Image (cartoon, rainbow, N blue to C red; front, side, top):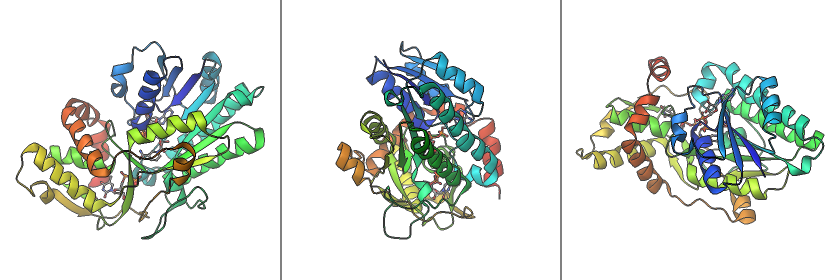
Length: 349
Ligand code: NAD
Ligand code: TYD
């Protein structure tokens, strides 16, 4: 019987992971631990909230005692760790929040897991979900592989890099069974509209300007969240302890092309005249230290676990737009209060 603690399970990727594991593995018990910050919402999980193998606990990974007691109380056998402060722009404004949750929070979980599992490490796994941003920024060519040197360049990526190093240190020093995956930019349903794709969709729906940083020449490799969840499932069940796996979408796109595609898709679906939404595009001040390009080489995962991304970006964008159009109430509930304050502050200069 596996009792899996998923941290950050009320967030974007975490809620997809929780739903997938609860539904696919009824014989596993899934404990979803989340602080419900601005980025987490239980409305992401309404469809499974009463499942017999699921429970939610509101908790802060920065509080060691509580984490430790929870792991003992629920006799946790494995951890899939996604809880984090995850937005680069916020990390530029408030780096300490990223150090405390992403670095100290991860270290708390590692210590609590080590204490509880130390007599039989072999039966347990600590799975850390990380980002390709730890590898830094690429120029026009090349890809990040698992052996690319770490070169984080934002407070967010520096805090994730630190947490990756801690996970490896616990594997090396104490023998804790660990695995790390570093993925590219996820997109799909339930993503909080501070990130590029849902922000653009939300702004088109509310007829607000579409802020493109700099000249929109930065490139991201877009990964359909469902493909990421399939990779997490495979890695969780098959990975060798101490290993790292890169997960990418094979879908590189310049920001400006992505924003224009979203404009076209929404104009078509909303019955607007062609070119209507593009008029909202506004080039704004660039993000400080803005990484030019991320691109992932996932051939290790493809070779070892026969994983490959199933969705090309244009198909995924259509599905994402459809989801946001069909879930306007979710979008409205998520974009009140704190979101409006953040938006005003961030985009007013
Ligand atoms: P998210 O911001 O949508 O969700 C993060 C969740 O963590 C939220 O539910 C939040 O309430 C919770 N949380 C934050 N601080 C907490 C704390 N102190 N204690 C307990 N819970 C806390 O993030 P996401 O996009 O779903 O990303 C999940 C993970 O994947 C993160 O570790 C992130 O670094 C990584 N990642 C994300 C992407 C992406 O494109 N979204 C890409 C690469 C890696
Ligand atoms: P984001 O979704 O914040 O992810 P990340 O910074 O982790 O890659 O941003 C994706 C890209 O879009 C990034 O190059 C920054 C850019 N961007 C904009 O141009 N405008 C925006 O309003 C946002 C939020 C991002």
